[in-house]
Length: 115
Image 1 (cartoon, helix red, strand yellow):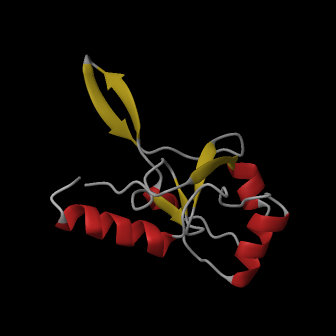
Image 2 (image 1 turned 180 degrees about the vertical axis):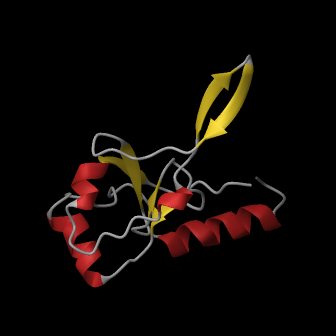
């Protein structure tokens, strides 16, 4: 089952490609659904600079909102993180608890029979 992260933000592919170390994993791009002869079929999709991808809280880039599906870029380096923060102005919102705290709350909730 796909995992939803705590936060992601959409960016134009052209803005992501401007990073010097960008290496796109094009085989992970979501296929496009088209109708052929009355049937829905999946066809390979090529990203353009005007398409949107999602920068996840872990600095991976996905083609969709789920943190663990259709990962197009996952070469997370200090240079990439700096590019995201400085050029893309990416930052996690203040209202999000730290990941460790959120995991602890989820663990406590599930051990109490809560979901």
